[in-house]
Image (tube, rainbow, N blue to C red; front, side, top):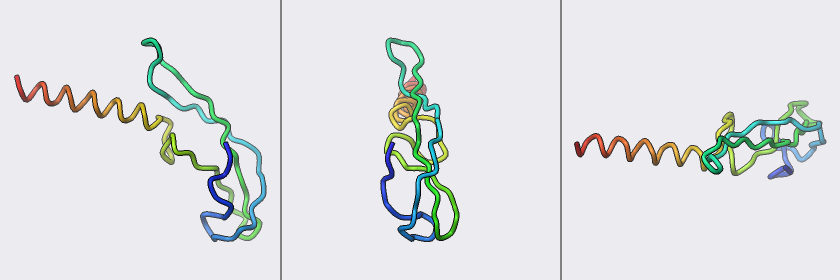
Length: 89
Protein backbone atom coordinates (compact mmCIF):
# COMPACT_ATOMS: atom_id res chain seq x y z
CA UNK A 1 0.00 0.00 0.00
CA UNK A 2 1.46 3.32 -1.01
CA UNK A 3 1.17 6.74 0.59
CA UNK A 4 -1.90 8.76 -0.32
CA UNK A 5 0.00 12.05 0.02
CA UNK A 6 3.60 13.23 0.09
CA UNK A 7 3.49 15.32 3.26
CA UNK A 8 3.49 14.78 7.01
CA UNK A 9 -0.02 14.85 8.56
CA UNK A 10 1.40 16.52 11.69
CA UNK A 11 3.64 19.35 10.47
CA UNK A 12 2.60 19.40 6.75
CA UNK A 13 6.25 19.30 5.60
CA UNK A 14 7.28 17.29 2.53
CA UNK A 15 10.29 15.69 4.21
CA UNK A 16 9.14 12.10 4.69
CA UNK A 17 11.16 8.89 4.39
CA UNK A 18 10.28 5.21 4.40
CA UNK A 19 10.11 3.52 7.79
CA UNK A 20 9.18 -0.06 6.86
CA UNK A 21 5.78 -1.75 6.85
CA UNK A 22 3.16 -2.70 9.40
CA UNK A 23 1.14 -5.88 8.87
CA UNK A 24 -2.56 -5.31 9.63
CA UNK A 25 -5.36 -7.89 9.83
CA UNK A 26 -8.64 -6.60 8.31
CA UNK A 27 -11.99 -8.39 8.56
CA UNK A 28 -13.89 -8.40 5.26
CA UNK A 29 -17.35 -9.77 4.31
CA UNK A 30 -17.68 -13.55 4.41
CA UNK A 31 -16.86 -15.54 1.30
CA UNK A 32 -19.07 -18.61 0.73
CA UNK A 33 -20.39 -18.23 4.29
CA UNK A 34 -16.87 -18.49 5.73
CA UNK A 35 -15.14 -15.70 7.66
CA UNK A 36 -12.55 -13.85 5.60
CA UNK A 37 -9.50 -11.89 6.70
CA UNK A 38 -7.31 -9.66 4.55
CA UNK A 39 -3.69 -9.04 5.55
CA UNK A 40 -2.42 -5.60 4.51
CA UNK A 41 1.15 -4.39 4.62
CA UNK A 42 0.65 -0.73 5.46
CA UNK A 43 3.55 1.47 4.43
CA UNK A 44 5.06 3.35 7.39
CA UNK A 45 6.79 6.73 7.13
CA UNK A 46 8.77 9.06 9.35
CA UNK A 47 8.98 12.83 9.01
CA UNK A 48 12.50 14.24 8.98
CA UNK A 49 11.22 17.61 10.26
CA UNK A 50 9.14 16.69 13.32
CA UNK A 51 10.43 13.08 13.72
CA UNK A 52 6.88 11.66 14.04
CA UNK A 53 5.91 8.42 12.32
CA UNK A 54 2.66 7.67 10.52
CA UNK A 55 1.08 4.96 8.40
CA UNK A 56 -0.32 5.19 4.87
CA UNK A 57 -4.11 5.64 4.75
CA UNK A 58 -6.44 3.36 2.80
CA UNK A 59 -9.97 3.92 1.51
CA UNK A 60 -11.05 0.38 2.52
CA UNK A 61 -10.54 0.72 6.28
CA UNK A 62 -11.29 3.63 8.61
CA UNK A 63 -8.51 4.92 10.82
CA UNK A 64 -8.08 2.90 14.07
CA UNK A 65 -10.39 0.15 12.78
CA UNK A 66 -9.82 -3.45 11.71
CA UNK A 67 -13.16 -3.88 9.91
CA UNK A 68 -13.48 -3.07 6.21
CA UNK A 69 -16.04 -0.47 5.16
CA UNK A 70 -17.94 -3.19 3.24
CA UNK A 71 -18.23 -5.34 6.37
CA UNK A 72 -19.36 -2.35 8.42
CA UNK A 73 -22.01 -1.43 5.82
CA UNK A 74 -23.28 -5.03 5.77
CA UNK A 75 -23.60 -5.11 9.56
CA UNK A 76 -25.48 -1.80 9.62
CA UNK A 77 -27.81 -2.99 6.86
CA UNK A 78 -28.53 -6.28 8.65
CA UNK A 79 -29.19 -4.52 11.97
CA UNK A 80 -31.51 -1.98 10.36
CA UNK A 81 -33.51 -4.80 8.71
CA UNK A 82 -33.82 -6.63 12.05
CA UNK A 83 -34.86 -3.43 13.79
CA UNK A 84 -37.47 -2.66 11.10
CA UNK A 85 -38.92 -6.18 11.24
CA UNK A 86 -39.25 -5.98 15.05
CA UNK A 87 -41.17 -2.69 14.75
CA UNK A 88 -43.58 -4.19 12.19
CA UNK A 89 -44.34 -7.22 14.40
